[in-house]
Structure formats: structure tokens, C-alpha cells
Amino acid sequence: HLPTKQIHLPGPIPGRQVVFCAGHNNNRVRACDVHGCGAFNSKRGNGLHRAVDLVCDDYGIVNAPFSGNRALMSLKLYFLFRINPVHCVRIFNLRPYRYIGPVNQGEALGYLLPLQERFSGITSHLELQMCDGTDPSPFI
Image 1 (cartoon, rainbow, N blue to C red):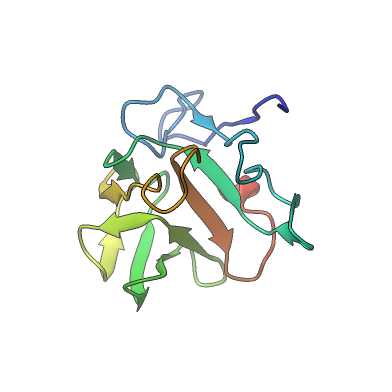
Image 2: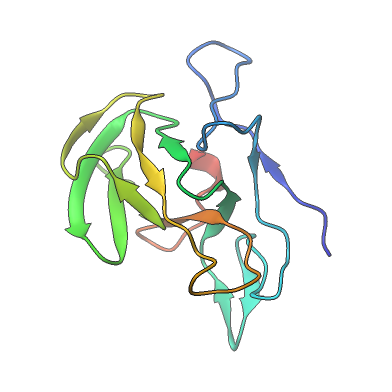
């Protein structure tokens, strides 16, 4: 197993970390398991994983680490979160509480959907993918 990488989010108070998944002390990238690794550009089959997977608990509340706007794109595949007019992130494995409208930093976006039923042995996680395919780490 590779060591897990921690991503520190800029919080509303200098030096304070904002955490995506309620009940966690940090944003931990999913280490390697039987279904692959969660780091950006990890090898996935014949390609690369163009997202970052953050470890979360099944049905755990997912908080907004920054302010932005929700924009409904797909009820089944992902939730779109617009950071600013230029950047947006797709959030996979999330059941949002609301699909459109503004959201403030720290507000609950929704809860994590369980993955074990479809992928036995996978670490439960939230997947973050920039709409343009770049690394989402600078925004989280």
C-alpha cells in the first residue's frame, strides 16, 4: 500500500482546516485497495484516474469546503459544484440535499452513497473531478 496523502483546505479562519466529510479530522486521499488508488493520475486499467478520492463514511454528511453554486447536471452520475465562474468540480458518490442554488463554506451538501454493494472491498470515498480534467487538489 502507498502512504495516504492529506489535503489541507483553506478555512475561513487562518490555519483552520475545512474537512469535506463530517466526522473526519482531515481530508485523506483514498489509499490503494482492490479497486485501485485514489490519488490524481493513479493508474486505472489502461488509463489514469483524473480525479481525487477522499475517504468518507457511508451515509456521512459531506460539507462544502468553499462557497460556490450547485448546478444540476446529472441525478445519476455526479453533482456539479461551481467554485467560481471559471472552475467547477464534479462530485461523485454524493446524494445532494439540494441540486441548485448557492452554498456557503461549511454548509452540508448532502451525504455519501455506499459503494460496498457495487464494489466489494473498496474504501468508501467521495470522488472529486475538475470539469476540465485538471488536478482538483489546489481547490480542496
